[in-house]
Picture (cartoon, rainbow, N blue to C red):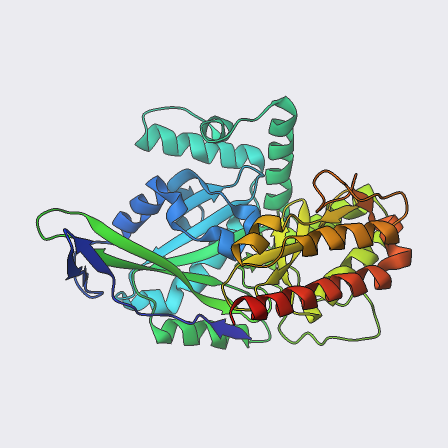
Length: 417
């Protein structure tokens, strides 16, 4: 099932010298810009794309090429994250009739093609791009080093992760346009319901406004338009060898039923979550992985916010008063450690007594073996605990967490009276 984004078509207002000025949006069917302009814009300014909202492992974006040549055509934009996750971008102006017919199939073809590549193939493509456009022979690692520091061990991890992600087809696919039409969204929903093609796709709209008639300054507002119900990500999984007949197996939560019989039943996982559990399995054992999935499932059912990183997930409480602030409860990392979240600053900002977090740290320290209340910081323990130690007292620990949530809710209600 596809969940369409709740778009807010607000009109940007520029305040200049105390005077409000309405910005003029460039017409979708005009000729103010073209697809090449969009490609160049996001190549030079990758942060314009809200990738961290879509799939955190793929952020931040590092530009590694435009118009990358493949056997199925020229890939518009290609990005990599410092952890070795690749993002494929297809840019379309929705005034083009073919955009509504072919864009989804086109970007999937690129994903299928890249799944046949090795790290060396990708590196050669980056070198070719730089020779054509940048008058240099820099390879993939050279471009990444410009944006982040990598030591020898990190470079090997980067290469290994890219190789793994290429082979497994772990790509983030984003279609970027200047105005997403409803017919395109409907097409995505239709294809998602097709039994032979199940995939999740993110459409990002760039709203472009003219800042001033006297110069070429623009205001650009990016927003994610289309997401699925469970996986708000653009993920394509491709299984198979490098042979020409490799088949795409694109998985989402479509048609998945939740069973209460298994403690590890979860909504379809994102790439970030899948990689986290793979690392947890390597560092601990199958029992701890099941337990971590149980924690994730229980937290989700309670309505807590799950904040994913490549090496951990954090369980947070959305401010019950609706401010949008997130109050950290606890974090579980890939090595099997877990610890209380730092929430004192957020509580203070919301007018909620910091002492609530002190009491939580004290009480939970008494529940867990070999853990003591940190009397200096007061809101933490003297060291991290482990999932092994948490498992026997899990219900008791969660009861105290739930009590903490109720205390925050009540204190928040009093602060606004």
